[in-house]
Length: 39
Image (tube, rainbow, N blue to C red; front, side):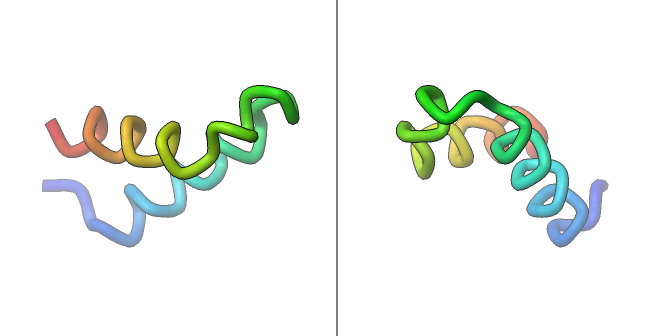
């Protein structure tokens, strides 16, 4: 199992690397990334 803190860190890094226009979807994108990593 992946450490939840590591998942949070990866989700944040992916989110921050996205263009600003995509980042505006912010929380929804982060939720989807977390769900994918936890699957």
